[in-house]
Length: 520
Image 1 (cartoon, rainbow, N blue to C red):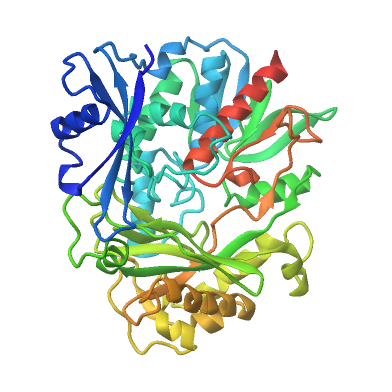
Image 2 (cartoon, one colour):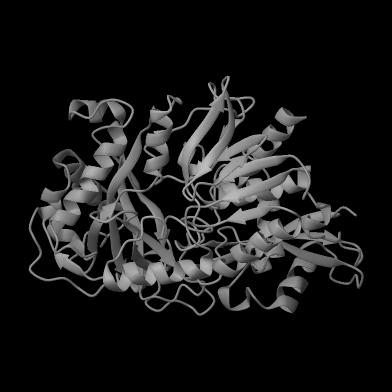
């Protein structure tokens, strides 16, 4: 049945999770406090920190009896697809796995190929890069089951509400083990300690309904006939034939970009963003956002969003991780790449964020980078230059924020969450000059709004360079298929059509429906 009304109440943090209290307040706001059959269902929870004291905003749907609409698992719509038409899904990140789930619902058999390992086996390779600086090029923070999102925070927020069904993606996560809190939080978050089990459960669903998932299986060739993709060849020599192909390999699969180019399959250079990861004490960010010396118990670790313009280019925070950790995200030996993550409790004493500037193609051309791989080659050179400056390990070159702005190498550095360790380095010189100048000026501008952002107690660490793909794999706007190759459906962040877990998952859903139209 439909709700008879919707109300919003504002409560202090200490009362925000008192179920009986907020239920009574909602019914009173609806004028139904004396109605024993009335039920208030929480649908949205957010924080308003604009005033002197932070408050929770709670939105409820009001029903006149207890017959609240039942929510059934999405998998109730599934049937076995063991003998159905085969769709090869290349990549087991959110784009690939949600394409696979949607394909099952639509009656097709997904066969998922991933270059990395399953989430559990992948942990050993993450430990190797953290503790010993050993980079497995097929299993790391970017590659492996669940993609980059599995071990880089698990934030579930997107502005791309028109791309697909956000609520469906969230319900599928809940169906597979996530807390139902993500259905109501304005900025839902799962945490990198909980996501692996959820991702493993999604794989079991795919397999239980007749799909297949193959790990340690990376694509080495595309086989075409008369302009149509017929099969792909994997690293172990296995040939996978399919009726359609989803290409969802993520933003760091450089070998796939080169392979496509080698096969004369059209790809395009694409702008991206480049910079550093900035880390403050979480207590400072809490004080800045909440105005409290000590954060109240029911308030989450505070986050922030920073953006400004410097000489016509955007400088902005990216993938902000409150109560988080900086992690090494290189995908090959000989490069330094960093990213951020948070565990579910977000209880680290540090807050980190990407701090980057947009890099446009005309700017790259002015500095000698041209052609389809202009952005990729520029990205790669910066990462390799950072590594060459170090001792051959995954230690991160770092600078106190105020020293970076002033163009001075730091004499020493504060503690950090980055497990491989950091060392003082002249990041203002290691970065390309035009990039460093914009970032330095960006910190000055943002410090005018966020006093203390430019401080000796915070650090910047290089390099934050995998914000998005430096390559776009084109597709038709209507049928989502590659304009040259029938049956090939570029998908997700690696193809240039998404920017996070939710948007990638929704793109996977959309591509699955495009394939259904193509095959039917």
